Length: 197
Image (cartoon, rainbow, N blue to C red; front, side, top):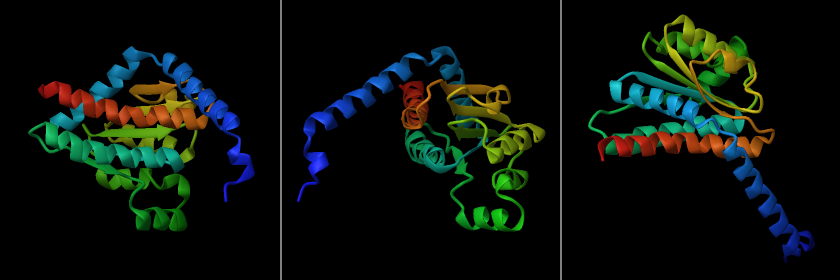
């Protein structure tokens, strides 16, 4: 039986329209030149054989993981080189061990200390740009001579001034921010396709 509240299609349609309008508004706030610079840095790293690491929390973590899917499978179909990409929030045993034995703020930076090298790239995904584990990951990456791309929302947070390049959605709605953050991974994939076309 249909829930009475959901049977009011006019309310559903109004909500859908409002949300899509919000997406459109947020899209218009993007600094396309800065977006292109961030996308280019990722693609250069993928093409150049550098290790690209991604990370994020919650929905941002899901986006960080989704990037790896697109860049490993999609980009490798497009170009001759085989991109090396991993998501630091995908290894649950490592996440829980570091959280339990050290601190949750170290879940990404501790992995970076083992995996990262000068010339590699870190892509951090964060709505607020203020998560402690994200900020520590940026610092750890920089200390190892890595470049950092920030995929950020809202006012960019502390991460905005720490990253080398940024895909920034300056909009105060987490779901809208996450939707546009998802598009970042697809833009990198499309740029790879254009690179060989």
